[in-house]
Length: 358
Image 1 (cartoon, rainbow, N blue to C red):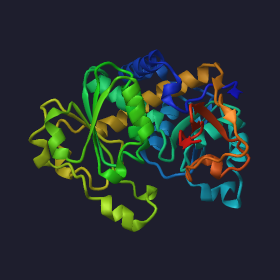
Image 2: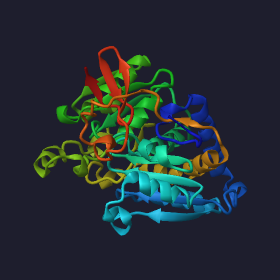
Image 3: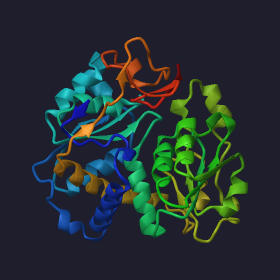
Image 4: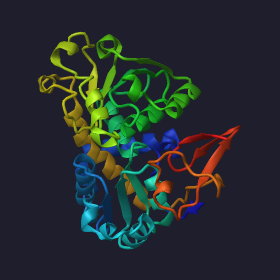
């Protein structure tokens, strides 16, 4: 299934050259913001946020306003017809008809792709459950280019909720495409990186290791990407409480780190980075959030101006097979055709990347 609009569902749907061009545009906007004032005059962006957001939502809104455009949408589905039972297709179809570009965040995995299928304008994925978050990855890469000067030849530590961390999944997929990057995956056994992401690291020739100790990893890292343990992704409060305080970065742990270490965090934080780290020059997570405005300005400009179609579904429809991921959008929105990519005796859901053994 092909849409006549250009969408950003997964950053890896585009070549690395496209990412680099986008990042370069973000750098130029950061350096010369006045050149882009009014670039989206008379354009409307719709923001559909089914989940809470501060940075992603506000940075998208700020980006569009700085470009001279206007904004419609909701940040609480309870204030829209979603509360009356309206499905994603109908909401998307209606709202996209009012706008030139649409940004969606939703708690179910594969929801952004499902929205793009029925949309009448370009769709940007602002986070689909625990699956992907491509615009956070663009923010992270702009930050690294600005602060480290490169996207390759780094040892990158990712710490915390690697299983449910959509920012981690997108970042691993992206940085694995640059030469000589190594990954240190720091988590408990319960929150390890999903197998399909590790398979991507292996397929691109990236070295990685899985460890439990943050202290053990600190001396070798060029980048430390901290993440919060996400209460909303756990099945029970008890399961969350068992994990929530395992990783805390504090001033003491920073003593063994490299002088040029970069500490990133997609935010919000809870207690996984002590506030005594905030004043360390290596702590760049607040600056990282500011860079998000400029890369999203670049993305809005690129998506609105580019009329290239997007292939959304290319696999085989399966009438009698359902995705086994209970958080997949296809298990909520029954009208969606189940589509899978087959590889040997394994099929992979085209919406959420869940793998099923036949």
